[in-house]
Image (cartoon, rainbow, N blue to C red; front, side, top):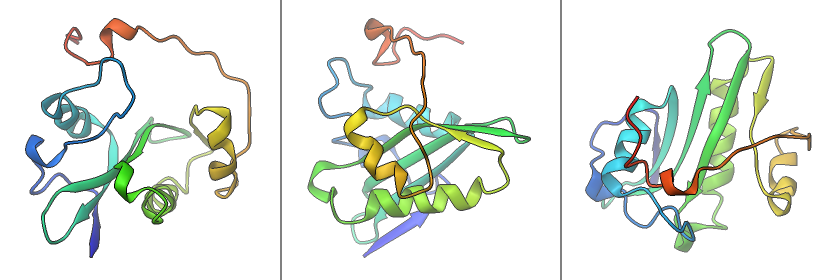
Amino acid sequence: MIKYQDNMGGVSAGRLKGFFVGWPNPPSPAMHLKLLNNSGMRILAIDAKTGNVLGFITAITDGVLSAYIPFLEVLPPYQGCGIGKELVRRMMVKLKKAYMIDLVCDQDLQKFYKKFNMFPAGAMIKRNSPNQSGKKICW
């Protein structure tokens, strides 16, 4: 059974293993925990039996007009089971009053997000790959 929660109760770095697949310099579970704790909004999909996190989505918002969804991740063995869809659905409910909800994704993922009334638009991005793990960031 999967439970969904928007708080960090019971979540430790040890329950955040296996994410960021394919990243050349992924965040450690400890940095992932910090990412989730510092997110304005988050929803977690948790295995009710083990307490392990199976997926998560985060959002950053100004609380007035706009929100940005930087992360949606589901562990590879659980992809295709509806967890990502449910995470997005729940986040869209939380963000329903926002004028704009933006995210950037690869073209092959656009079909997934169209199911949530999102549409392709131009974007500009910059990536600092050496900082991908989060170790060099000191705000």
